[in-house]
Length: 72
Ligand SMILES: [Zn+2]
Image (cartoon, rainbow, N blue to C red; front, side, top):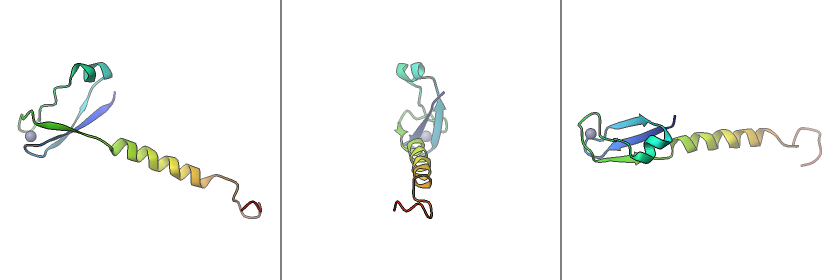
Protein backbone atom coordinates (compact mmCIF):
# COMPACT_ATOMS: atom_id res chain seq x y z
CA UNK A 1 0.00 0.00 0.00
CA UNK A 2 1.24 3.51 -0.74
CA UNK A 3 2.45 5.74 2.03
CA UNK A 4 1.37 9.37 2.20
CA UNK A 5 3.65 11.89 3.86
CA UNK A 6 2.11 14.74 5.82
CA UNK A 7 3.34 17.68 7.87
CA UNK A 8 1.43 19.45 10.64
CA UNK A 9 1.48 23.21 10.10
CA UNK A 10 0.78 23.85 13.77
CA UNK A 11 3.59 21.88 15.47
CA UNK A 12 5.66 21.00 12.33
CA UNK A 13 5.49 17.31 13.10
CA UNK A 14 6.20 15.05 10.10
CA UNK A 15 4.18 11.85 9.92
CA UNK A 16 3.10 9.29 7.33
CA UNK A 17 -0.13 7.43 6.68
CA UNK A 18 -0.44 4.10 4.92
CA UNK A 19 -3.73 3.61 3.08
CA UNK A 20 -5.12 1.92 0.01
CA UNK A 21 -6.06 3.99 -3.05
CA UNK A 22 -9.79 3.65 -2.24
CA UNK A 23 -9.23 4.78 1.34
CA UNK A 24 -7.29 7.78 0.03
CA UNK A 25 -10.08 8.63 -2.44
CA UNK A 26 -12.61 8.52 0.38
CA UNK A 27 -10.51 11.06 2.25
CA UNK A 28 -7.83 10.21 4.76
CA UNK A 29 -8.03 11.27 8.38
CA UNK A 30 -4.80 13.29 8.32
CA UNK A 31 -5.12 14.68 11.81
CA UNK A 32 -1.75 15.29 13.45
CA UNK A 33 -0.98 12.36 15.80
CA UNK A 34 1.14 14.63 17.96
CA UNK A 35 -1.11 17.61 18.75
CA UNK A 36 -4.42 16.53 17.20
CA UNK A 37 -4.56 19.49 14.81
CA UNK A 38 -6.40 19.18 11.50
CA UNK A 39 -4.04 21.74 9.93
CA UNK A 40 -1.89 19.29 7.99
CA UNK A 41 -0.54 19.39 4.46
CA UNK A 42 0.57 16.67 2.08
CA UNK A 43 4.31 16.40 1.39
CA UNK A 44 5.45 15.37 -2.09
CA UNK A 45 8.64 14.47 -3.90
CA UNK A 46 10.85 12.11 -1.88
CA UNK A 47 9.78 8.92 -3.69
CA UNK A 48 10.10 10.44 -7.18
CA UNK A 49 13.61 11.73 -6.46
CA UNK A 50 14.98 8.32 -5.45
CA UNK A 51 13.51 6.61 -8.55
CA UNK A 52 14.99 9.23 -10.91
CA UNK A 53 18.52 8.98 -9.50
CA UNK A 54 18.69 5.18 -9.84
CA UNK A 55 17.47 5.36 -13.45
CA UNK A 56 20.12 7.86 -14.54
CA UNK A 57 22.83 5.75 -12.90
CA UNK A 58 21.93 2.69 -14.99
CA UNK A 59 21.76 4.71 -18.23
CA UNK A 60 25.27 6.15 -17.83
CA UNK A 61 26.79 2.74 -17.01
CA UNK A 62 25.69 1.14 -20.30
CA UNK A 63 26.22 2.23 -23.92
CA UNK A 64 28.86 1.58 -26.58
CA UNK A 65 31.65 3.68 -25.14
CA UNK A 66 33.93 0.88 -23.96
CA UNK A 67 37.69 1.26 -24.44
CA UNK A 68 38.73 0.20 -27.95
CA UNK A 69 35.23 0.19 -29.46
CA UNK A 70 36.06 3.29 -31.54
CA UNK A 71 32.52 4.69 -31.59
CA UNK A 72 33.16 7.81 -29.54
ZN1 LIG B 1 0.67 18.87 15.18
